[in-house]
Each structure stands twice: as structure tokens, then as C-alpha cells.
Length: 186
Image (cartoon, rainbow, N blue to C red; front, side, top):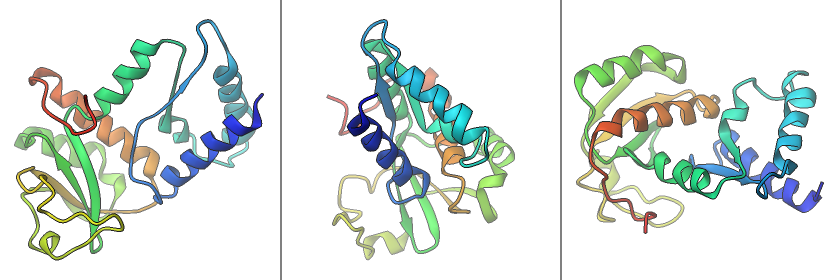
């Protein structure tokens, strides 16, 4: 196996797993009919997950495919409803392309309560603090996200794989809605 590819994959996944990088879709693409990343995934399961060195759900941080259409769909599906996220103080603010219904919000609070350090997931608009808060990459509410609905919650800051699962669940909620704009979609 090419160690440079593995090094890059592990570095990217570690940054997401530890919260040093925002949630993003990671797609590992094999050559058609290839098994490079499938063999790597087998190693992850046999040596890391089986021995408890990483969590059983950490393999949810990535997708392996040898099909470019699947790779593209994985990336675009990640931004179906989810737009982006950031911390404002101790709260994780998740920007969405559409508001969630009360039933969807209730389902998220039930299904993903383990992600919360306390309180619950709440729907909101932009927080007043966002206007004054500058992220590591300068980005203020005036960055064309001020109109986006948000979910705000106290994330436990340890279950990043589950956070990715929650984002995927939110995006599946959007499958019945028409395609919405995201700046990374061309």
C-alpha cells in the first residue's frame, strides 16, 4: 500500500475525529475493480476497531467506492440540507439550507441525544453573538449565511462520528425537497 495515501487519509480522518476540522465528506476512491481502500478498511476493522483503538462508529467518517458517480453523490448528498457549522462560544451552530419541521427536530433530539453534553437541539436563526464572532478563517454573519436557519446545541465534543451520522440523517430529511444552492456545488 502507498504509505503517502494512507498518511493523508489518516491525517484527514484524525482531524475530523478530534474536531480539529469541521465535518466534511471523505471519499476514498479505488480504481475501478480495485481494492486498495477495501484492504485498508479491512485493516481498520481488524486492527483498530476490533482492538478498541478507535470507536466502532469511526468508520462512518469515510466512504469507499470505485465508482466516480457514487463518490460525487456522496459529496453532494452531504450538503443536501446541511450547509456548514461553527462554534459560537460553547454551542455548536449548524447552518441548514432549510428549516426542520418540529417533528424532524423532535426525532433528532430523540435519536441523537447522546451527542449533547446538556440541554437539547434547538432550531434558531442567526445568534446575536455570530455578528461579533470571528472564526479562525475570517467569516462573519455577513458571509451570505445570515439568512440560513440553524440548529444550536451543546455538542459533547467527543462523538464526531455520530455527528457525521446526524448530518447524514438531516440530509436524508431533505430528499423530498428540491435541490438547494451550496457554494461548493458547481
